[in-house]
Amino acid sequence: MFTPRRIRLWGTGLLVLSWFVYVYTIAVPGLVDRIGRFKGTDYIQFYVMGSLMLDGRSDALYDADAHLQEGRRRIDPGLTLYAAHPNYPPQVALAFTPLAHLPYGWSLAVFLALMACCYGASVWMIWRRCPGLQRHGALVGVLAAASPLFFALLRYGQASAVALLIWCLVLAALGRNRSFLAGLAIGCLAYKPQLGMVFAVVMIAAREWRVIAGAVTALAAQLAIAWWATDAPTMGRYAGQLWTLMRDPTLVQIYPSEVHSLRGFFQLLLPSHPAVTVCYLAALAVALYLAARCWFTAAPAGLRVAQLVVLTVLSSPHLLTYDLVLLTLPLLVFADWIVRHPDHAAGPAVRLLSVLMYFAPFSANLARLVPIQLSVLVLAATAWYWDQIISEESRHSCVPATEWGSIQRRYIHTLAMNRNSEAITSTK
Image (cartoon, rainbow, N blue to C red; front, side, top):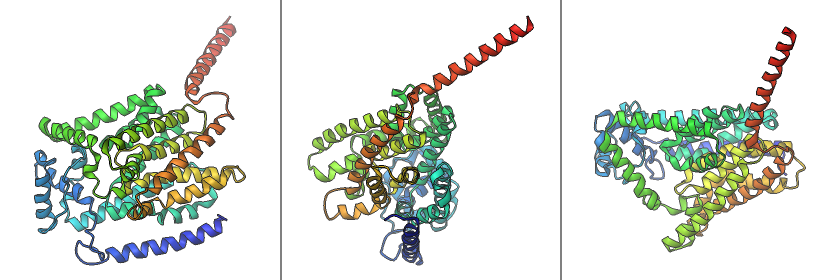
C-alpha cells in the first residue's frame, strides 16, 4: 500500500496544496490574514519581550499590562492579543532583541525564515543518520516540506523548531558517545523545561553523570546570562510565573482542544480538576517507566531517543499543536526502521501509526467536535508498540546499554596494561 511511488505522489500533492493555502491565506496587506487571524499570534510575546529589553525595561518582562501597552505601541494601536502570563525566561527576551529593531511584519518574516532553517537542518541531521532512508532523500524532503507539523509551527509563529534542533543535537552527540555534549544540548531546553523533563528523569535514573554535568553547565550558563541581563526581582517574578503555571497550566491554554498531552487528554474528558490531576499523574508514572525501560536496553540510540521524544510529548503538562513538530524526529527514525524491516510482524501497525502521527495537528480540529484528543491515543499506541520493538531489538545484544561505557573503559584500561607489560618484557 505505502509504496515509494504512491507516497511521493501523495506527498507532492500535499506539498502543493499546503503551500498554496498558506501563501494565499497570509499574502494580504496588513497584519491580519484572509480568515481574520492576526499573523504570527504567538510571536507577539517574543517580539514584545525583545522590545522591552531593547528599551531597557527588563522589570516589565512579566507584567501583562506592560505587554499589552508595548504591543500597541510597537505593533498596532488596536491590538488586543497579549501574553496574560508571560512565561519565557529573560535570556529568550535577550535573544529577540535584534529582531525587535525591525517593524513587526519584517521581524516576523525573518523569524519564520530562521525557524524554517532550524527545521530543515533538523530533518537533514536525522536523515543522514538513517541508512534506510539514504536512497529516499528527495521523498524525505518533499514530506518534510509538506508536513502539517511544520505548517502548524508557521501558522502560530512559534519557536518550537529550536527545540526540535536541540533534540537532534542530543541524538547526534549520543550517537558519537559525546555524553557531556548531549547534556549541554538538552540543557538548552531550560527555556522550556517541560520538554526536557522526561530526559532528565531518565538520565538521573541511569546515573548518566556526564550527561547531567553537561545539562547543569548549560542551565547555569543560561541563568547567569538571565541574571546579568536583568536583576534579582525580575528573576523572582519569572520564578513566580513558572510556579503559577505549574499549578495550573490551563492559564495559558486558551483552547483545550489544542493540547496534545496526557493532561490535555484528561482535561477534555473529565470535568473535575482533581480527577484530571490524579489521572495525569498515574499516566505520567507509566510514561516515565516506559522511558526508563527503553533507555536501559541495548537498542540503537536513535530508537531510544525517538521513543523519549514521543513520551516527552505525552508527558508534558503544557504541549500545544505547534510543539508537535518535535515528532519529526521519531517519524524519521521510525520510518528508517520500517524501511529496513519490511517483513516485521508489527510493520502494518507502526506504518499506520506513523501516518496518523504525521497528521496529528488535525486532531485539534476533531477535538472541537468530539471531546477526545485522538493524537494522544495515537501517541500512546505508538509508545506501546515501540516499547515492544525496542525490547526485541535489545535482545540481539547480551549487554545492557548502560554497561557499554564501563565495558569500553575497562577494555581500554586492559589494553593499555597489556601494552605496558609487553614493553617491559621487550626491555628485559
